Length: 446
Image 1: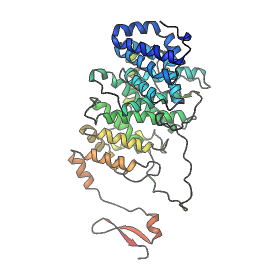
Image 2: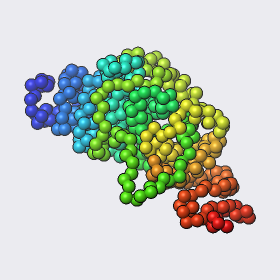
Image 3: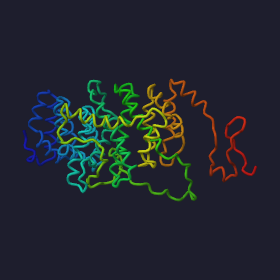
Image 4: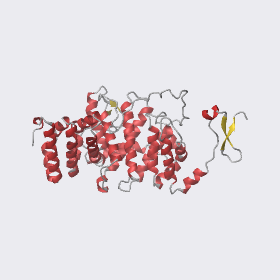
């Protein structure tokens, strides 16, 4: 094989990578031979020197090889710091690399998500950063985890092609860990720990992946269908996070329309949007102490993998509720203030996807008293401009084919009114009609 360091020109590297891509696509035997010659040192050198011209072909090569041999996917996860870290860094720094970002997202979906290796990937990515950072805890966070989740969400939102059910046999393992990851990131804010930026970014990106996964179920061209127990578990956690938030406040009005809006807190944008994003120097921050980890970067063997899954399973088994009171108990571990702008909107959108044509989820929402909670989101919120629309979509999905929920909503009656500053300025106020129970506007003076 060619010596990587001798290839001084990017064009030569690109040509050689494309040649290897063609060879890998020809047969699984060629893929295995290429892997044996290049893995891990030569592939790591290519990844370290990757630029816009070479990142895309390198990702395609890795994708073809791992598709042909599952063992290569496991080996790839053991070398994430040396292989994927440089690619993730390059793409996060250069938002115009949309083609390379799309190919890397497809690679992440196949190797990490579908093979059930998300837990291995997330922990391994941060291990190298945590060893050199100021926080030497066992479970660090890093910026590469955020970029990985963002790429995965972007790929799931606009998939290059449908996946077969056989290719998704290990998807549940990744979804289970992703749900735990979102739970842990949200609970971190309730604990008032320092250095919350990376936890917030991981939380936002994780919710985006869950939204994308559940929205695929609404597409007839995608055969993805999560098991009911996974959907119920996801529903309970999402409802608890939403129930923990303070009620939506009335819209704020500016005294002077020409007055500029107050600046919003900085947040890392999706790397595929092309917008400037906040730069982090790669210092690792610590995640909650109860995040399950693996003792080494090696892929879990049969026993080790089962032990890791049991740790996540045990943690998630505590996030169950069968009544509204138990849901409120779970909500105590989550923040009352939104960790980021759009947090409430992401939760309501995820609930809307979960309720779509799923009677088991609809029944669970009604059992937990979630119907009224979702109805209360159907109003304008300054921090979540689309929450009303997603709330209405969730109500529509709740009511579809469920007469019990339809009757419970139709039986609701207004019990009080809310003072509106706009009406007070014109001398009007809302009152409930004693006969019809409907709100009417009356003159304040009367």
